[in-house]
Length: 419
Image 1 (cartoon, rainbow, N blue to C red):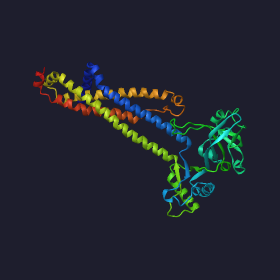
Image 2: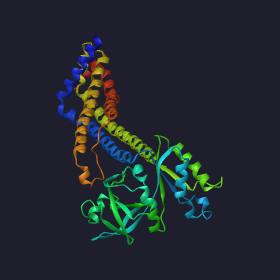
Image 3: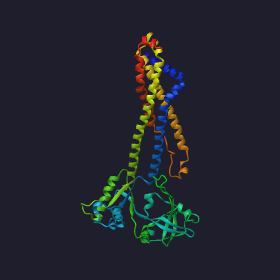
Image 4: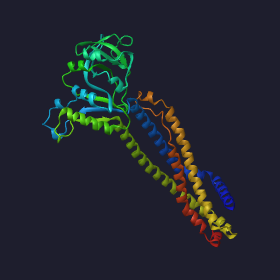
């Protein structure tokens, strides 16, 4: 009970002293306030950026994997590029024997000249796809119908376009039923898919028209292209197992020498997620170091002001000691005052950071960046708030301890003589 009363009186006295020197206390806390505000705002913006990128990747499906042919350096001159390209034979083997992947599709793209009745547009991305492509990419027609196996088998001259192509090619209505020419060949538009921006695009790549045609038809149009296989894993966190199964099937299908490396590469969106999370952790560590430095600088300011305060109140300290004040009470008085200043500065910094975060959330970044960037999901992580306040209190204890010990050790006679 006595201890609680002592602490209550000490805290009340500390607030009284801070209030008596409001301007000096505010300037003393300024370093802590700015440090906590700046670093907490950075954490908030980082959280928003990470959420924006991850949401884009999750739209594609974290279970998606891609297989593409590649020639290792040690096989240079031993195999031809045409032998290592993934092809329909590889896809047939994967469809027949793979148990850990599904919706397997072959696709390839090239820039080609596309003509409508009124527009000639060079360099349009024309992509040959198989029907499972819609499931893997999660891009379904918003108008018309998807491509099907009949279109593939009969090599029909039909196509899909993205919605951006409707305006760029100046097509009537939704484009379905219109005709376009690709390399002089006439194609009927049977469907329109939504335009999708790459999830990690920050404005470097301009999103343009896309045209999708049956893969077998694409092979007849283009002599040189580099196809890829896209598929979905049947479960989450199965990239290693799925890669091992694909490697086994393709090595057997291609009859590779046991001493040769794989002539393909398997990549998964989960790998990108891991890279993003690793990068976020690295940035968090760097930002944590910065917040530590900024708060240490603020702590030095606290220590200097507390030393000035001890000097100004030397006679008061001497008088209290002369009437029997315990040195521990004197130490607690100055130490608590320093801690209150630091915690108060940290709290004010958090208030400013929260206001800044709200501003980041409400700013229409998508309009300002043409939909390539958003901080709508920016938020201050709870652990950041706890760390900021906790570290502020730690700084107050560390840098307030020196002045507090100096005050507690003052000789009462010498202190009373102080002018």
